[in-house]
Image (tube, rainbow, N blue to C red; front, side):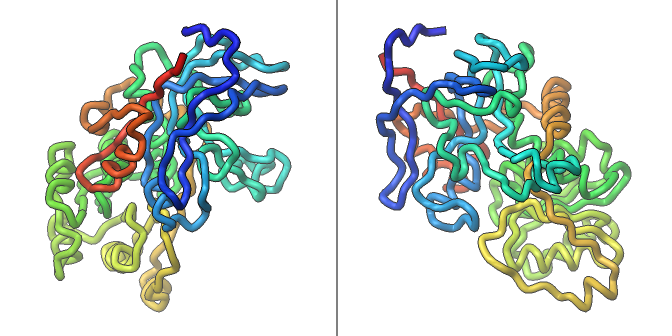
Length: 349
């Protein structure tokens, strides 16, 4: 680990209405129950690019990004025993209060007072250093390199969604959207033994990537008969549909695919309200299931899947840029040409 000596300043990323910039900031010191982390890699999430363009429903500008982060513990505060300096870690970025009804019932991801590291909190992982409650850290196994470890957080999202949707073994499944989460969902579905998986997207390149990663068939989401094509490719209606797009048209397709008796799990973050055919949902007994972030057990499953080789970093991580090019990293991530773009922190002397 580099010796930062008497340094008191560092570089961190700020996203504002004026753009995405790297600015000087004080190096934070860990308080009681906290750890100081030297960041190594941070992923650019779809939530980040949406927020940067003012399209995220819950993140307001300016904010400090970086909730998909891998780093090394530098220092620990008082009463911290779960991690030690020198360990590689990733952050479970939900910051629950631990006292509300949801927290007491074992659902801290639904905390009534929830804050979120890297998404509106006063720190984010796109910085040389950050502090975070030590109970939000997961130790990265030695067998996972940094690029693979950077996928632990995003892979936890589909792990959680699939757990909420119900058993997928032997089921016919449609995945709407072949971005990062859609492709990771595909991998988890395959690991769980789904019978047949059809993936849709409007971009041909993304559809081809889904095929290469094991989808049984792909369909152009913009096709007028997309629902009919997906049903034909599945050979039946979808038992479960995962909507990773969450716009009016994808929700309509999801409900049509799940009819009758199916489940629609909304994984994507909607930017606005949508209209749904409530008479069809009632009469065809369709279940609409929201999926919000993850729990510790989803991180554990994500790590286990990565150790098993269910997901390979080379298939998902398509660009790694230095922090000095973070604006380009956001641009590349939003372009549709990449799956996962990572930002590598650059220590300054």
